[in-house]
Length: 164
Image (cartoon, rainbow, N blue to C red; front, side, top):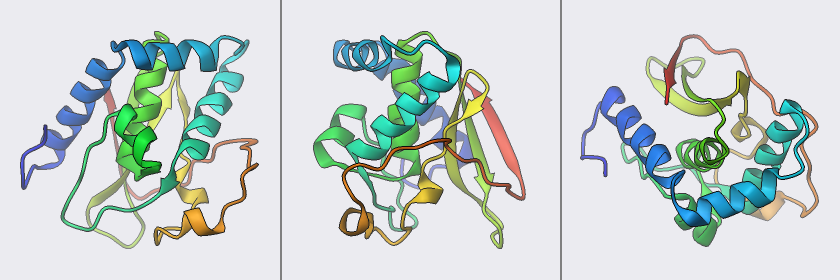
């Protein structure tokens, strides 16, 4: 789905395409319907999406310069994800629920490139990666009952926002 050596805009196009396609699939619609059926406010929806993503998979970074895209089904099977894969999962579930989905890609402090992405759902960010160990050891450190109170959004040097 993404070519070797793809630039930022080609990568974003592939992510957007995957979210649009996956959000139409029956298994994604079923998960979304079940997960969000009792969400009676936007913050509730945001917390349900964040907690589902956080608890379904542990963080595992890709090794540069590789960027692997995973469908929500593959992420759930592998139980591991990076920021791109979490974004595809959350974005697909939200879009299946007819929510507005945007992608925020940011430049990490001390770098000269855009190296992190997370979804914005109905205007609210859902960034769960900063709460996790960045070395891939998250699955060895996490308890089974962690729950988000408020998904965080750190401040970044530069950012770009893309609408799906």
